[in-house]
Amino acid sequence: MEIILLPDGKRAHRRVHVGRWGIRGLMALAMVMAGLLVYGSVQYGIQLAWEQPDLRAMLWKREAVQQRAAVSQAVRVAEENMDALALNLGRLQSRIIRLDALGRRLVEMADLDPQEFNFQRAPGLGGPDERSVVQTNAVPDFLASLRLLERQCEDRNPKLEALENLLMNRKLESEIEPAGRPVLKGWLSSFYGYRSDPITGKRVFHDGIDFAGRRNSDVVAVASGVVTFADNKSGYGKLVEISHGNDHLTRYAHNNAVVVKKGDTVKKGQLIAKMGSSGRSTGPHVHFEVIKDGKQTNPISYIRTTR
Picture (cartoon, rainbow, N blue to C red):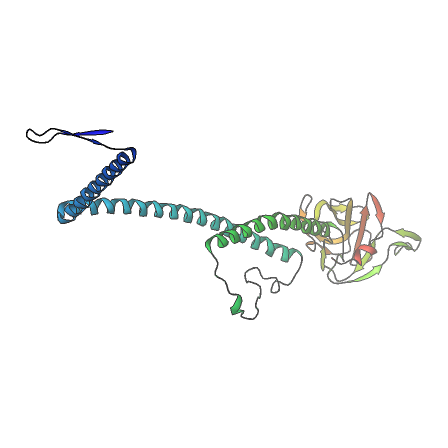
């Protein structure tokens, strides 16, 4: 490459030959000069901006707007996370309340000690103070523990409900299964089976068990059920008949007064009549019968059973 130099005046021009490396050097020098020029312009602009209060205030204002936008975004994200955490916490608290109520019902149904299984009080915990292994829960660890507790509550709930249903069924079976004595006071005066008839003296079959006692003493249902008969009946006098819905029927005869009526629902131990001597009877007593699957059965096994 040749460079022609044109001098002032009348002097002849000169030619300068520049090689490849010379060209590269000139280009590099030009780039360095351009970079220095740009850097100097920028620094001069910055210096000029800081020396001018109005321009400096504008830059500060722009920076403040950007910082406020960033802070607002961070606050919004934090609030959304807190709302989600509060929602999960509220759901968890409602599940805990439901589990506590279910636990109290199970304690009552299972006849457990309510002081020992107190769902209103946290169980006793403890141990030595191991300072060397104390750790601070990080937020991710806390959230993971919260989710684990929520899953445990969801897992316990159906199991406790199944247990409640099982205990409820057992309790209902216990309530409708005849058991115990039909009187609160009195004594067993005649057994089931063959005996001498108290009126004729002949050997006859006795279909029930008699409990003697004072007139107008309480006669109670030996199981829960529905009253299917509450009136006078030949030979039985004033009779109460209760169906227990499991192919069991009980009869309470010779009453002085009946305090229930047909169609009433009665519970185990409920007063149904007053002891008397109505019908074919020689004195105040209750003639108690148990019919299973339509057949007379010996009530003694039910009387000796206590539920």
